[in-house]
Length: 134
Image (cartoon, rainbow, N blue to C red):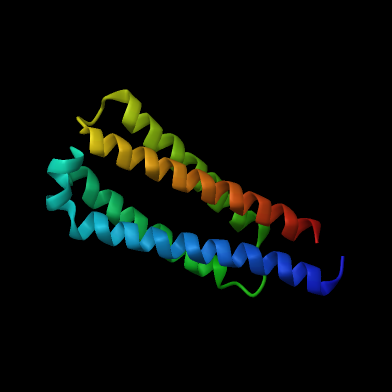
């Protein structure tokens, strides 16, 4: 493959990582700023939503750092994919374990979150494969 193909493949992965990072940051801010307001409608206690929000902001910062590398290290991209996959599984476990007394809206909210991180993981996996193949 040519250098242009390699750059295009890493550029696509970089874009996905940046979008993932920005959406993670927005979600983290929503979880922090809306912790009290969302507690009732979601059934998600603030003792859960505040740490989630903080973790999301940390994850967003990590995604930004990884996307900012001149050449994205494949192991970093693999770490992001693993993190998104684990996040998806954790959200599904929270929904189906009954550990948190979620409302119907809370269940839908966490299931939507699980779907979003699963899609990011899949897109990043495709991007990583294309980048390493180039």
